[in-house]
Amino acid sequence: MKQINTPYTDTNKISKFCEECLQEDFITVDTEFVRTNTFFPKLCLIQIANSKKAIVIDFLSTNNLKPLLNLLLNKNIVKVFHAARQDLEIFFNLFNKLPKNIFDTQIASSFLGLEEQISYEKLVLMFCNHKIDKNYQFYDWSIRPLNKLQIKYALSDVVYLRKIYSELTNTLSEKNRLNWAIHEFEKLLDTKKYKHNPKSYWKKIKVNKLSNSALQKLKKVTEWREKKCILKNQTRNHILNDKKIIKLVTFKNPTKNVFSHFGINDLSKKDEENILRILNCKEELSQIEQFTYNKIELKKLKQLKILLQIISNNLEITESLIATTSDLKSFLKDESDKTNFFKGWRNEVFGNYAVKLLENKLLFEKINDKVIIKVK
Image (cartoon, rainbow, N blue to C red):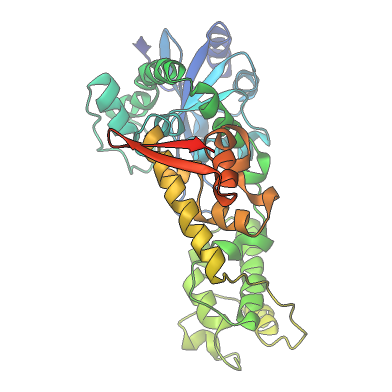
């Protein structure tokens, strides 16, 4: 494969390369971006490799990527990524559309007993017997000009990916798990994952138990902060970080001095007024539903976790890939619409057995250090 050391900036050259890719079964894709001072990632480079050529598109020096969009939307060509989530977010922000027919080597690897979030470097070493130079792993890709070593590093993210893809697809097919992986890739193409919802960010904050009043204030302050970040394209830490929000919502009877008390000095007077209005709101607050378990339900949860562990060991894939504790709790709460393991391949390997377990219709037999599950 020929690696082109000069970044593509000319629309005609990009278009010609994309036309060449239309003859391929698959292409490998990666991006380089920076996200230091902005809410949205700043795209700098796009790397693509087909069977004959690997190129870098300098996004900062080109203004027409329509040929690339047409390629990404072509359903007949597999677009191969490693840890695709951030790359897909970038393309969604850029085009308001997501690529069609993708393959994620990180997800695929998890179906073969490898780490659930295995690094690209480990896969390159494993499948290509090559050690990648990490000197530019955290480089600011917005700096120009780029030297040949930087371009070589960027290209390595798509060059070795081709062999990894071929090896993974062959092994997944042999184990009859390729469809399992494809089902997971399709989940990444849900546009809701890439649309920021200011109203729901509060759920991502890890915090010890709060009063209902503090939780409601947390929801409203984080919603205000998210909208501000999106509008200004600034990081959460630049506006108001999570830790300081928690301090604000748990402070009793806050006044305008509460901001200086917690070292919050970058907000405008109007911003402070908006936040204080939320913190001192006296309106009736709706109760957030809490779910508690009795002894019988805790026993069932423990049984489900043991079943999950057995199935995970037998399949040689991580437990969390099959079901999370949250999934198990949703099942016990009879929230079938929120229970992921009743969908697709998960229902086949775990969901059906979970139902039978609670119906006391499973038998377990240990043969040669392996636990065999049988239905009564």
